[in-house]
Length: 403
Ligand code: NAP
Ligand code: MG
Image 1 (cartoon, helix red, strand yellow):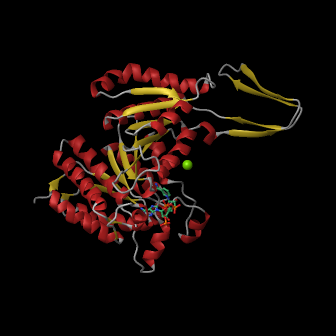
Image 2 (tube, rainbow, N blue to C red):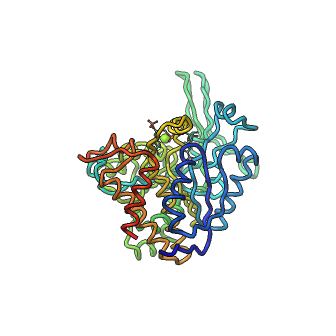
Image 3 (tube, rainbow, N blue to C red):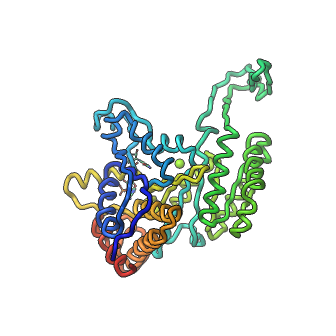
């Protein structure tokens, strides 16, 4: 078989620890033998980020804007322990945060479903994809402890110097607490467009929910911005694609999600997304089977696994011990990026290859060959636990049959 030719490069962001080891294995075993792989490579491993004062992260985000598609390996977000471990000049920020800010993107997370691993809610037969608005609200809040006898007010100084005031509460009978938070119309609009675009891309219904009946200005603004952008820019496209935009109250949404069989995108405000994404990930079984894609309002895509660098397994690997780390989410980051590259460049062979590689991966697990994390969860009768590399080799055997 001739290698598949790529017309345009995709941006490759290498990373840290166990996922860096897996990254190379995926390329060597499953990609390079079949594709004339064109990537613009950026090393986001912590050592090189430190060497370049994190410039490499910014450069990789700029390259993503240029080429439109990126695939990213999990990376370390430094904390105090990492400062010593890697002898860092500074506690560099989370690369994901930096890239998300530069692309103004929204993160979509979806579980990969396989037979033998039943969600805790067994009626969830299709994935539920969560989109979290990653700006503002309680994550950028200002809080105060208020003493009895105080009066708390909201005060805005307008551009012309005049002030608008609203009473929050008169603390005449007790001590208490207050909180101020904000969001931006521009950020909410970007979030809405990223969600509508991704729903069209995936041909999935889009759900959105807030508490607009109680929060008549704050949450209602989210509802209104979504409704206006949908009417003006997306309604016709949704009709043509045969998909729906559905708005409801957050408590109604939660009840419907539980009763549903999945198969939609659920757009969440920042806090709802934080909480619900952990619930959805756990309910579907394994963080190692969760994919993640950052989508910008202009339709730029960055694919990655939702999990981290799997540090505990890496230390075992360094000691020469065998590991059984799940590579599926990282592998699906690659297939997602290759398929998107194929779509944008009109290279159907690349899309077909991505489809077959995903199929081979799922077939391998459903045939009973899996890594340790899935072995513990799977209800299949005949199952075998394999090590990190042998799993990828087993996928390759299946892939050869499909190609
Ligand atoms: P983690 O890497 O997601 O791993 C937490 C635990 O989950 C692992 O110890 C392992 O459990 C299990 N696990 C996760 N992925 C797995 C996989 N592919 N196969 C098998 N088991 C898997 O989270 P962490 O240990 O809290 O964080 C490690 C580093 O990752 C941190 O430096 C953090 O900053 C970084 N991080 C990066 C990203 C990102 O780049 N997107 C996201 C999150 C965290 P067992 O140990 O029980 O086997
Ligand atoms: Mg959370």
